[in-house]
Image (tube, rainbow, N blue to C red; front, top):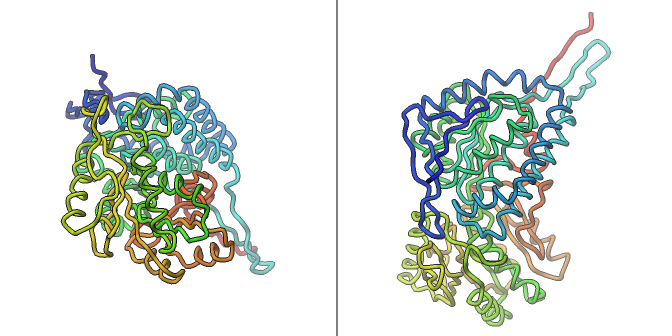
Length: 479
C-alpha cells in the first residue's frame, strides 16, 4: 500500500483542509513512491498562525538550550541517515550510494548553527559618558522557506538551521517533486525537543501553497532557492510588503582551465563540476573555458571520461542518477535540440541513457558541446542537467571577459599552478564563490550566494546567521 503523507503543523501531522493529495513518482523507475498532501492558503494560514504563536517561546529560550536542541536534531538525522537517504533516492533519484552521505552532511548545519546560537549578542557604541548606546540582534519572527527539488534535505537544512538558531520560527514549503524528507525532518525536530509550532511544513505546489506563504502578512522574511523568474516574482511581493528576502537563483558558472593546470587533477574534477547530482546543482561549472594551447588535449580527455562515466541510481558512487522529474528531463532534451539547430558540435552524450535498469527512468548521458558561440542557448541559459560547453580562450584577459559574460554570478572555478594568476583572476570574477584547483567544496562555514541575477543574501557561514537577524539600536541618556 502506498504511504500517504500529511502536512506537519504545530508539532503533528495534519490532513490538508481541502482533502487533496498529489502523487510523487520515482524518476529512476517511474513507480509511485507516495501520496502527499496538497496544501492551500488555509493550510498555510494555520501553519503561519502556529509559528506566530510559538515565536516568543522560541526567541526567548536560553540560546544554549536552543543550540542544544538543534544539535540533538543533528544527531537524529545522522541516526536516521539510511532511512532518509533511501527516501531521497526513491523520490528525487539521488544515487542510493550518495544520499545517506548527503543526509550526514545536512545534519552538520544543525551542529554548526546550534553551536553558534549562543554567540548571538549585541555591542555597545561609545558616544559620550552621558549616553548609553547599544545594538541588539533579534529574530524576524515567522520566516517562510521555499526549497527546490534538487537536494531536498540539504537545501532545507541549509536555510532552516540558521533561521532557527537566530530564534525565528519557520514554515517550510518544499518542492512538490521532493517533499518527503522535509516532513520526516519536521517529525525528528519535534522528537529533538523543538517546541510545537516552531517548525511547520506545508507541502504542495507554488500557486496553492508557495504564493500564500509569501503574501501572508505575518511572514516577515522569505528564503527562496529556485529560478530567476520565481525569484523576481517573490522579490516583487516582498517589495510591496517591505520584507527582506534571501534569494539563491541559480547560475551558469565558468570553470577556467589554464595551460599550466595539472590535467590529471583538473579533468575528473571539472567533469564532476557539471555532472555531480546529474548536473542539478546551482553552482555547477557548466561553461568550461580552456586555454587554446591545451584545448584539444583537454577536450579529448574529458569527453572520454564523460563517455565512460557509470550511470544508474543504485550503482556505487560515483555514478549518475536520473533527472529528478519529467518536466526537467524534457527541458534538457529541448536544449539538445536547440544546440544542434544552432550549430554546436556534440562531443559526447546529447541523448537520454538507455539499457538495463535505465529504460524506465529519466536518465541523461553526460554531455559536452563544443564549437559554440556566445549567443547559443546552451551557453547562456541554465540547463540544470549533466551538460557542459567547452569554450577556448587565448589570454587571461579573454578568459575573464568570457567568464563574466553572463547574467549570473553564483560560482566559478580556476585551474592553474600559478598562485599569483589564481588570486588575480579570482579578484576579477563576478561571482559569489571562486574555487581554485577544486570544485563543489561543501564547506558549511563558507558563505555562498550570488552576484547579479544569481541572488540576494548569503547561505552558510556566519553571514547566513546574520541574514536571519534584524538590527535594533537602543540609545539612552543617563540622567
